[in-house]
Length: 448
Ligand SMILES: *[C@@H]1O[C@H](CO)[C@@H](O)[C@H](O)[C@H]1NC(C)=O
Ligand SMILES: *[C@@H]1O[C@H](CO)[C@@H](O)[C@H](O)[C@H]1NC(C)=O
Ligand SMILES: *[C@@H]1O[C@H](CO)[C@@H](O)[C@H](O)[C@H]1NC(C)=O
Ligand SMILES: *[C@@H]1O[C@H](CO)[C@@H](O)[C@H](O)[C@H]1NC(C)=O
Ligand SMILES: *[C@@H]1O[C@H](CO)[C@@H](O)[C@H](O)[C@H]1NC(C)=O
Ligand SMILES: *[C@@H]1O[C@H](CO)[C@@H](O)[C@H](O)[C@H]1NC(C)=O
Ligand SMILES: *[C@@H]1O[C@H](CO)[C@@H](O)[C@H](O)[C@H]1NC(C)=O
Image (cartoon, rainbow, N blue to C red):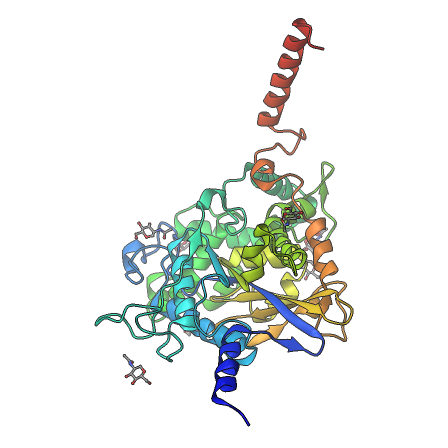
């Protein structure tokens, strides 16, 4: 006989015990890295008739998330809920402050994308959250809406999420890469020179491989918002020329992410490896570190394990450049992204699921990609070198090895301020001098 008590117990358990297993593999942790949604251009070229005042949505001005972008993340949030709450019963049905941590870059569009996404995951009027408990029971508060904290760090020092964080070392590596035979051959090719010189003539700025993206990105967005007038206002704009310029830009992005056709050694420096270390290295290592701590804390009750033991989902809300650097670090940028276009699209998302096998006790991961709004979750695990072709799961050691290979040579906030051509930068050199001076002084005072 099923008593009322046991039903209550079952219901109570259903609320607490949320696990998902596939055969012997149990899901223990999910990390998510997504790009913000549709936005206005972050800047444009001088002769562009669509200057900052042309962009009025999302608070107005450059680089803001549009209502379309908000909807894209609302949709992705709903998809994540459908997968991890409804289907897997792994994430809780309502917001649990201990189980999710969201870290955004300190940019309006990534923060608001995260908020829109979380609205899709945990903010709907579906009676999973309770008025008066999870949100105020007052007129004017949207029914079901639960605000969720989105954390951030200073953008200039955000080496995980912001690929343009202040990092002179990264700049040095790129300047060196530009002197390599492969990049020079590309830059000096007739096609690239023709695209750059035409654009220099059209745009009122000296266009080179470093700033071409400003033009292709602005034109990409203007085709979404002003497609009916762009050809009259920018008389030189044609679909073919745009495609050509965009392809050139795609190749530059590959170079900038350390992807070269040749093993690109310049002055003894492997610019491919160095670039991947300085760009994708920090975030890949951060994710692997989370997984290592998650695993080492299993069954532990020490205070330093409380946070990770409770945590089920760590989220990075960031940029196309972040996803691309991450994929480049794993050498799957073309495998994962190219079929859908040159670069990660709006609301693109990578999911890294961590599993533990109950039989061999070993950790496994799965990598999943959401290409853009409207596409599903695609398994991309098999694209990673060393992962099996006959299984959906890959040994975590494969990912750990990649992380180790492209681990920054020093903590990134230090490495960024070293000098490529003397192992220590000016800061390091002066520390060395101070050390020598101190040693001499100590010697003078007879302390040696
Ligand atoms: C974010 O929005 C504020 C106004 O709320 C604006 O001043 C600022 O320029 C925006 N920053 C970015 C990076 O979009
Ligand atoms: C919330 O959902 C309930 C149940 O479906 C419905 O009766 C109510 O009208 C909804 N409230 C709002 C504001 O949509
Ligand atoms: C140089 O560029 C041309 C195309 O412009 C290409 O066919 C050739 O493979 C490149 N050579 C090298 C060494 O990259
Ligand atoms: C420069 O651009 C103008 C239009 O803005 C065009 O008439 C002219 O032919 C261009 N010159 C070259 C060399 O492309
Ligand atoms: C813009 O218009 C062109 C035709 O002139 C069309 O081929 C293209 O798909 C449109 N782009 C968008 C983003 O709507
Ligand atoms: C790199 O190699 C691929 C495939 O062979 C080729 O399509 C591409 O043009 C090459 N890129 C450069 C910059 O040489
Ligand atoms: C937690 O602290 C203990 C010592 O109290 C240490 O042995 C262990 O490695 C720490 N675990 C983590 C995940 O930091």
